[in-house]
Image (tube, rainbow, N blue to C red):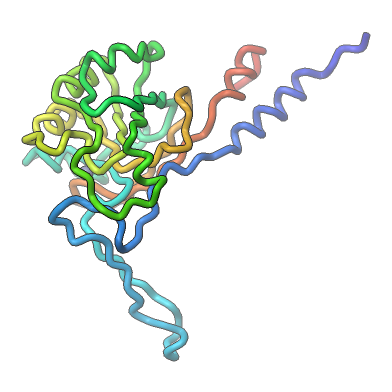
Length: 241
Ligand SMILES: [Zn+2]
């Protein structure tokens, strides 16, 4: 029997899989849930074609912690680095998405029970929070799922470089800031406000590109995942990656 040209066949599948991007960014819009005390998101037209202006131009007003965004060390550390200094190589690369549907306080024990793949450097946590984004919730909720200080310590001890969560803070609402400080002092990049409602647990490539806001302690980001299933298939066949 003639051999099937598996290499070409697999290659085609791999490219097909690689092109599958999952947008896990929350849309920025007025009326979206924002942290209490935040001025929210304002998007106003400053020039309008229909009024005879040269073009349509909008002006964006918001704090930098709206929607999907990253926190830089400066957010909680006086001498911390700022968002344009965050290493891009930490925000782009293989990551693991874990699904914790029934947990509110994400402790070290909870994270231990995930039995993460060896060498996980980027970890995104999908919780019940993602359902709030998916449902189009407009009110801020203080009962969101988040990391405890012990959970943050676990992240640092595991050598994880980036931790992502699907609500507006990585720490619980009544946390004094200790969870943020543990992570930021260790140089862990914090990614907040993800919408992981459509993402199954597993391996992905993360692409997170925050706005290059010079001197800011955080920045909104466009964040996508790319499935790695096809890559594993090809890898198993000895293909080049
Ligand atoms: Zn933040």
